[in-house]
Length: 280
Image (cartoon, rainbow, N blue to C red; front, side, top):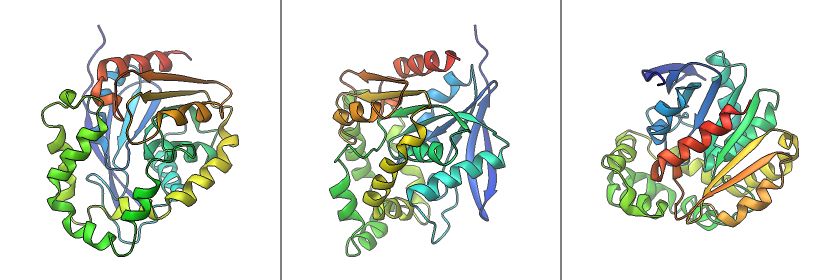
């Protein structure tokens, strides 16, 4: 029987701002990267399991979760990927297996393109990618100068909206476990909520064009794609053209599951990720 590891709360200073991350386990480094409205809380079911075979770091990227929200933060894809690599420097992580979900999956691919020698393998959970049209209209709407200030004012009071969005992200909302909505809503009570997210949306289309142009740089990296067949956020149909960008890439679809398989079917998700990581 594998030993359970404690989950430690850590902080580093990056660009003069405090960045939070969770750390647990021992073994090869595994870095977990959340999606657009998530933070390290997203990995509450995966982290304890994967810590049995890896040293796991789960970050709150600057601007979200409980990390600082520095004003004027560059939120484009390349800047986010560069910050992730500098986080690795700060915690003395020379290389790692990198698991990213949704927008975090796009950041993971960009980080691998910037430093392909530092990313051993990629695990991408419904990653934002150039072949999915979902999100483009919403990005344009929410980043509109007439809409963005209103969204920022009401962000701390949107728990009802958070609940609606969460239900849309599950294939079966009955699988939402107690405490999930509260966990995702908690950081939105902090000053600066949604600033980072809106910053990401402002460069969405440009970022996807750049991501497509750099994908040949990471074609050699072994990859695992994980997707829910009922994903309402990133089109499942985009999985196949993305898979074709890699020379060694597996694709697994979770039947009847939405955008968050690591929460909706955590036991199955953890098993698949664990098996992939065990193949050295």
